[in-house]
Image 1 (tube, rainbow, N blue to C red):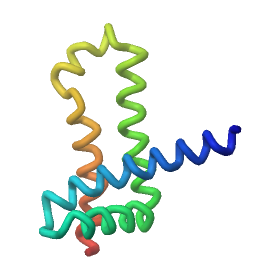
Image 2: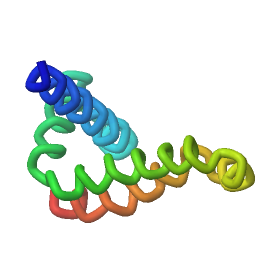
Image 3: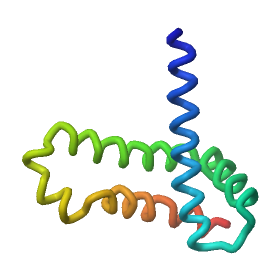
Image 4: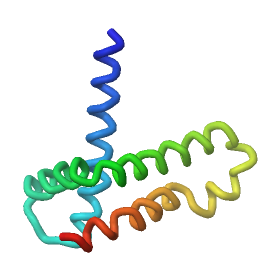
Length: 99
């Protein structure tokens, strides 16, 4: 049963990472939907350490929001979900420069 949970968590993280890359690819390049999804999957696997850092930035931000919601309320109002997205943009920029 734990193997199934581990596979589901890995698949969910891979889909989330592909979503991150897909939105950045949509903003930069013109491609079909299938091509964008394929390129997002390939980029997320090709630059796996950066992908892990991007997933960690989202996970840490939302874990901090859940744990320290009362104290981080002004930070949430100011940055919301854009802080992890900005961190991802900084991490993904060198990947796009290599293309």
